[in-house]
Length: 427
Ligand code: S3P
Image 1 (cartoon, rainbow, N blue to C red):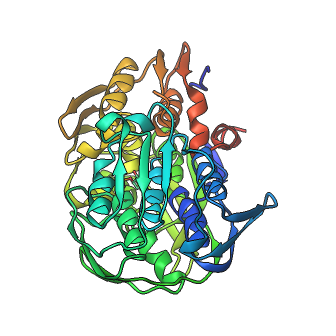
Image 2: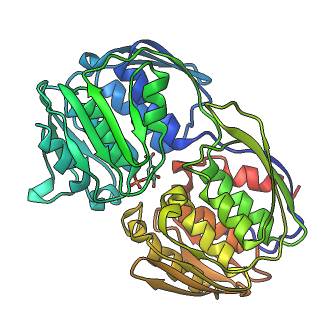
């Protein structure tokens, strides 16, 4: 598709789409809880719809009138053997979190997805849940999907020091631990997004978190709840950056979820000298706010260490931001980017370099020298939604010619109305 180029003066207000991580979990918690869960503001992106369909395949009654989703949960025992293999599409969150739920169910399930899913590492989930008593195996003796998960009702608790900083892995272990007999302990490598812990509490469960150590007793029964899904800061990120780098712009984003395990990008913008104001609108449990950004003069910084999991999904768009900052930006400790929907270190470096950026991939991140002018090019999303959206924001800076994006359709994974929302900003 041909992308919009050469824009200035972006102005207006956008209500960002609902949070992807929380939307997935709202269906999962609704399914394993007893009673009715009502979900408002669910994200109708391809990934979350894969989760909805997967739980219907697993025998859970889920109603959807187009506005509200109602999940009729009957506890873990309401998760029944599917009649066919479950298709998770492009969704790593769906496949990894479901594995933790299926670990405690006494039957076999086959899970598969698209080309990208077939390359995502799964030992990180299979090893701990197999240690708890499940039997999972990948395709042809590898760790890759299609996978088979054989669960057991006799799951053992686990004491697990996580080798990777991953909320998906942590969440899968927590779902298994909720079904195990006894207390499990998980020690995180770095603190990662804590929506699963929050929702265990919201659904009436008990969990103790102290720094990087999490304790949880099983078995536990959860109770259906009303869930309102806030906006996704990972989707807001594309317009935050657009507002900062496109000349004469001022953009306001409403209903942005501000869970502190997700707000690393706001810290980065402040450190780079970006003009940003936040007005908090949510409550203590569900922090949310209205964020306004304006075109700014930016400077390069170093991004590494414990902030990385707090902005892991935003690194492609942060790399673009760095191409428009004066001086050098170094991103380190982000080797996890290599195993996302695509290898995001290579994808970001290749595609932005085609457009004229001075950007170098490293073993665990990127080095970017700014500020550079970007020019026309033929680019690809590699089928990765966040690479596609980043490239459209980059194209807005291109003065002439055409920017052609291959595999633009991937964007509907997390932000189906992305192009419509962008259009609103240049009237
Ligand atoms: C997610 C966790 C992160 C993130 C992904 C969503 C989640 O993945 O990149 O987009 O909802 O738990 P990892 O757990 O692999 O870091």
